[in-house]
Length: 238
Ligand code: URA
Image (tube, rainbow, N blue to C red):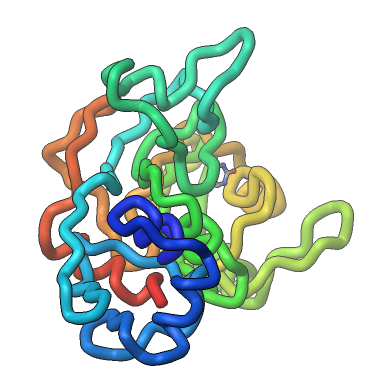
């Protein structure tokens, strides 16, 4: 959450007073003076002190979800069930999925109520890697690896960044592979495989940046981030 929201919640301060405390170096984030009221902070992950007093707050939530096929990656939808419908109705306030997976795609989705985090994780300048497990209806060979590496060009001439294709199994009517991409174009993986002549029949995200899908989570299951994952989040805070 933004530093100003955290300070407002815990102290009776005006925005002007907050700014003054920040500019006088009396607000510290992990011992370093805060720079702006809009700094993204979380006292579960960082030590935040205001005039020497540490703020305790565990209102921000981070979950790892193994998205099942059939749900859409949104908070609400008029007609279709969303990933947020999997969560207990009493605890969903502010929860949203970071990024989107197609309705028929499974796998890793981060669900949080930390507003600025999504922007940080999805910001194209971060080049956050995403890794997918893919099944297709035809053969894959070294020429596909090369084309993914060189940057696939879609039929509308959009050029993808270099991607790493690793073939796990290949036969004339069924192949398995993993792909690592560092961007997020609409239906990107499905379109990339169509360009090498095969159709994706199953798609699952297994990694997002350094966050690896917990293999003990069945589709539709989720769990709170563990302490290791919370520490990984630190790089996306100010
Ligand atoms: N690429 C796709 O085609 N679909 C997804 O859900 C994610 C990446």
